[in-house]
Image (cartoon, rainbow, N blue to C red; front, side):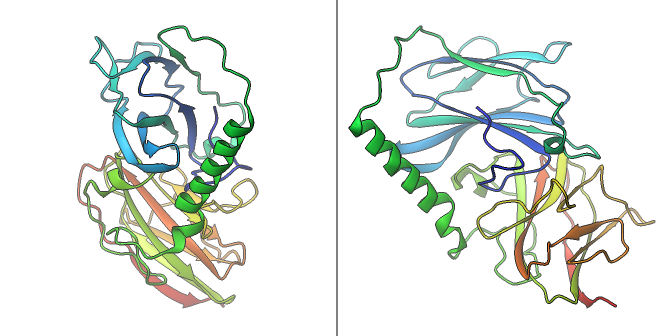
Amino acid sequence: VSYIDKHKKMLGDNPDARYYTAVISDEHSYRIRGNLAGATYTSFTIEMSDNAEGNRGVGSAINDSQFEVDENGDFEIVVSREQAEGNWLELNEGAASITTRHYFEREVSVNNDALTHVPLSIENLVQQPPRPAPNDADIAAGIRRVISFLEANVISFGAASDLPWVSTTPNVFNPIVIDNSNAAVNYAAVDNVYAMAPFVLQPDQALVIRGRFPKCRFCNLVLFNRFLQTFDYETRRVSLNRAQAVLEEDGSFKIILAARDPGHPNWLDTEGRAYGLMFWRFQLPEEDIAALQTEVITLT
């Protein structure tokens, strides 16, 4: 089922990506069928859980450079504990769900394009009986899972973090480090390198970000609120990918965050918010990522 859209936002959603999820059991095996649909990147990730109440990071993952795709973009992947022939995603013990990612680097963000469809299905390899009707205990357990999910992935996000890519200094990014720290983060993408920092601006201030896009599969910058929900990208420009950005003459970029248009093509609209989060995704980088330089200026 679809995970997020422009009106349903959580877990650091992305205007340039379609996400789907399927609840699974490590006691079964599955077949995924789909088509790349022109995506810049496609992947499948096993989400882990100690039990019904808690998540403990990610398990196995596979992306489109690691599985066979036919000339029409069609593919099949078997998800199982034992290795299968052909495209195979290991089903880890304790697996709880599968997350899919379909990134598109276009001038119009894919989630503002209702006509783009990603064909995708998943089926159990052994036919199962119909699900039993839910009872009081099932519903109570579901409510507890929702509470646990919100506490672990939304409400407490503002707590201190020791992740190297999370800056707590307003308007300043940490040095970007390419490592595997994402594997321990709930619902993170193992192929991404992240950089996140808060912005804090007065109404007459703007934040200028300078840097260079690295060689990588995908790259964008997105503005979030404190609960990792994107700002309104349906009617405002609150994210920027490489297909949308206008570069400087030397090939670098200059991006400006402000509450009003500063007259620059790479303006990101803060919606007049005094506070928010800036979130970079650098996917499968082929080189070191240049430091992100920032400067707070006064608008005239």
